[in-house]
Image 1: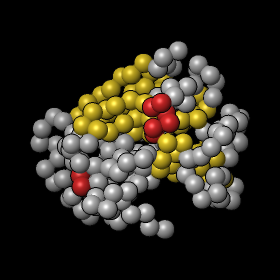
Image 2: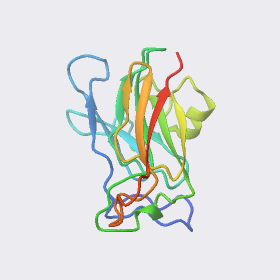
Image 3: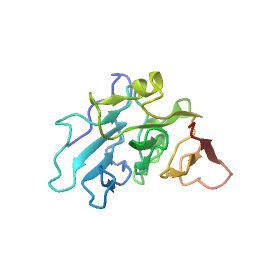
Image 4: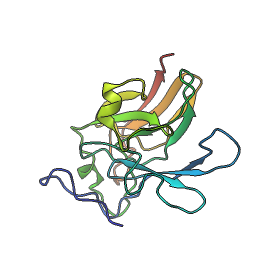
Length: 193
C-alpha cells in the first residue's frame, strides 16, 4: 500500500524507493512467545501487527505517529521495559533511511528539520494512535529527545539499563560523497528514574 500524501500539500511525498527500518518482534506480555511485530514507516508511523496472522492490532490506525512531515523511521524499533513504571515501550529515532535509487533522500528529511527519538507504551493504550505531541506533553508516556537539526538516525537505538545509545549522521549516507568528512554523532542519554 502506498504511503499517504504529505501532511502539507507543498511538501514532497515519501520517496517510493525509500526503505523503512526492519521489523521488531517481541512478546507483549514480557514472556517467551513472540506475539507482536512492530513495523516502522517512512511516513513517521509505527504499526503493531499480530505475529500469528499479520493483522493490525489497532484496526487501521498505527500505534504511534508523528504529526508533521519529514520524520521518517528508517531503523528498527527498539523494544525495552521502562524501569520506572515496568511497562514495555518502543523507541524510534527519525531522519535517516536507505534510498539507493534516489540521491535526494534528504528531501524527506531536510537538513533544517529537527529529528527526534521518541518512546511510547506498547500495551495498555486507551487511545491510538499515540502522537509525538502526546509524548511531549506527558513524559509518563515515554521519552522525547530532540536530536537537533539534520541529525538523522540511520541505525537502531540501544538501551542498556537506564541509558539510551543512539548514533546519527548529519550528511546523507545515500550520497556517493558520503564518508569524505566526519559527520556522525553518538548520543548517550540518561533515562530519568
